[in-house]
Image (cartoon, rainbow, N blue to C red; front, side, top):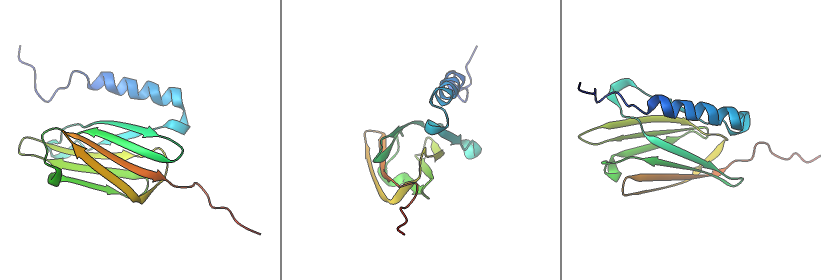
Length: 128
């Protein structure tokens, strides 16, 4: 029996882990990965790390040239588009907190994309 290359045997496993992590962390640590399945895009493996000062997103983007990666952020959603002759990646990642998109810094080395943002204050102090 030949396995269909479009079927990832670990998809359901990772979805269940994400669901359990969301349950465990509650609304404070909720991270959503919206997978854009149109256009035959492949799934990225993405990790999000949060501290009080910054948000760091690490994604495996193998086989793609640095110049073929397009990143956009509106402060709450990071969009990653990348393509090579063999595959395309399209991800919309809702960040756990609002970030200062102008503070973004990105590196790409050996197929690993890392993007960091400064966390933005939730509210401003108002002087009376």
